Length: 511
Image (cartoon, rainbow, N blue to C red; front, side):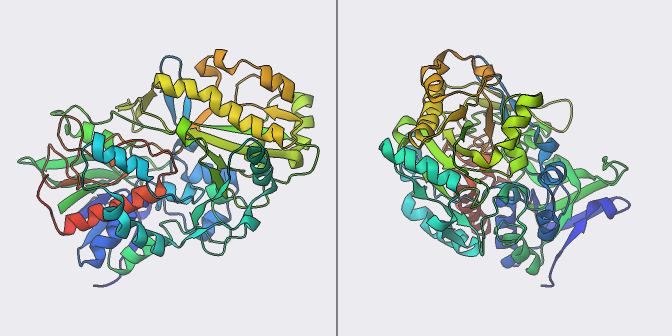
């Protein structure tokens, strides 16, 4: 089979009609994996991607602000509206060839054993065990070059939090990341200048293209073609009008229709196409891993940007439903979280070299939902489970106390409008009394909106990604992950996608 290519939809003129073996909507961590597997098996595959094609070197030369404008959905301003006593959660997602994998810190965790145990016993997903998933994790780790981050790559920011955490009885463990030749410039979320992060635009997509797959960027898919209860293709528009507005029509007919548009956007496509009414589960059960950061000021110079952006984590508080994760984004982004304005902000900004940062996330039960909005973006809402809401102050205290134990002089807590806190003020501050709307919260991990299950009334797809409602329609992205993971989901999504791809090639009977 001749090698494929990436076609920029914005440069095409006129309606486009294709007929292929498989059409995949979305080119991120899941779509790229499935495309590579099907194309290698001799299938004619086309991947449709709403976002632009930006090469790795082009992305690596961008400033963070350029990356956000070019490849982050809605300029990184998408959010889940907090219901009840829940924060507004900034949910950041990628929009480009390679999807969100280009914007992660590269952290690669396998699905924890205790999570799989829960899937087995509570969700009755008996096919998803550590032993059965082992070969898929191994293949993805090999192709993505997942490696252990050496201690020498830890920034001083991470080291300081680790020193304090150890004094309090916690342990800092090295992360595993999909990198090759990383020199620790702390730029992972905004394009690697060295091309060292092995995101899918550098691994699985080139394999797919070499095997004959074609990728069409700037193509907004808005509807499934369903005939006689069977998915037979998709329809959409090229974004080839001035301002990248929808223009010429695209129709792709396919023997297999595969959705990999992510947990936020695959449900929209299903809802627009009338899929999922029977079970009523489409767009529900969204988990987010609500995440919070703590900034601390030290007397000594920290230069927290010198080192890997996410080099280590602590699972010492997993019994509390908390995972602590090192992070230090580029300086301009760090300063956006520093409180104050005018002369006070200028003075604090000058102290940037003395700032350290660490983050943490909640292993949530999930209270999120995706609904159709007036445009092409979803309306996302999220209501924190009562137990998760109670964990929020505890997470903030765990983050801050470790920095205090390491000698921090001042803390910038993730509470909107709060001034810098001395250690004494921090310890006496009643975080439990702060309304949810005042907490600064973010997420990069939407999951579960088309979750996998054993029955149509508690899920959207079966254990092989097949929708209950429509034949020949598969979902392979993070939406199928049954519950929150408590760890960064990139590797779990990719391994699951590889498993589902092989199931597409060799169909199994429904359980």
